View 1 (cartoon, rainbow, N blue to C red):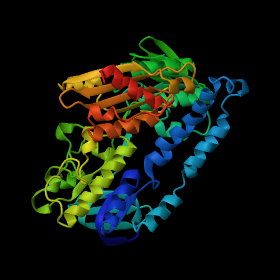
View 2 (cartoon, rainbow, N blue to C red):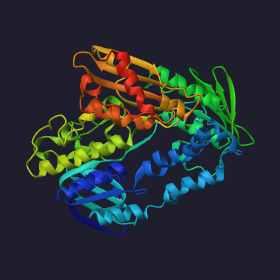
View 3 (cartoon, rainbow, N blue to C red):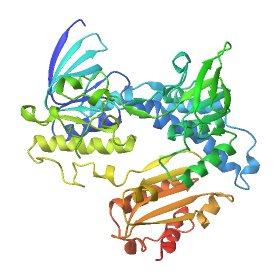
View 4 (cartoon, rainbow, N blue to C red):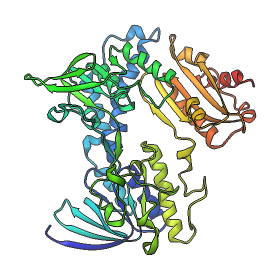
Length: 485
């Protein structure tokens, strides 16, 4: 380091992904000063290696397949997905992994940026090893926010450390389509990337230790499984990987507990965990218990509980988004960021003391009641709130209402439309606790369910929300009718 610079701000945010940007934006809107510390691209994982590029790779295949099953359109389809054009479209969506427009936004919003690695060195203190060769000693008047996202979890498979493999970053930033791709993992990222590359031209196999999409209802997972197999994907569920080996020709042999697979490229998609290493959290009393992975415990506003946030040091350390470890979804992380930023401002102005009230502007209450998520496979899975199984495990008095999606809107969407819907009803309060939809195009049904759950709309009032005809939303009417309204 050639020089050290000391700077003071009201709020220091470590991480310039979507979450960090939103925290900084809210505190600046509230009249405080803010700086973001980032050692990679401003915009973070979602913009460059996750949500945006993955959906850009999925979209061409989904559009082509939708046209192929509609009489009148199918006759006009004569080709397959142009992989080169699809990759170029993905490059455009990621701005070719260049972040100047995001940096311009920070400047226009009045948020400072320091490119480098930040490390907490004491209460409200962050040391930055700048990418410019300089060192920065930062002091926060009110808060330090950890918004460092998450990192892939790599399983302990024999031989894996000796074999080149993709994580999701490698897959979403791929420059060419491998001839043979083996995906280890049956979660959201695994199934999405498997279908994307199958439709781009790869020969794909998926290996899952359990069933696919284990956090979603089994009926939903089975429809996705059928969709993957219809695309020619070799799906091995309830299968363990014993070892992987690199062959002399550069290919990889994957040995399973029931055979082998050959791959030109291996994708490890076995989940993610909060990225908290080398942040200096131990310097303020936040340590992993008994050698276990470090996990932050936060209150409803993102305030980190424990030694770092009490005593003479006051309330100052926050975490939001994947780093907080509660809900690893971009949209939910941005929701947390808005509430956390507003809570910091409210505490600075004396308007918030103690923990925030549920559903207040400063609380992450929806994390416990209404987290929407979409699996962008074909068919899609859209879910919010509790599944029937989850509600029963929590001891709730609930009724599950399930139906195949078979309404005029779905028949118009595709003559051979296959879908499924579930509504979970709280029998004590007569409101919806959860909803799941599976089928082509169901992602746009999800926000209506989210509103019904967050707003605690009584079923007898929801009955008067008449779905337009002929749309897939008519499934709402059918669910309510089956329930008995």
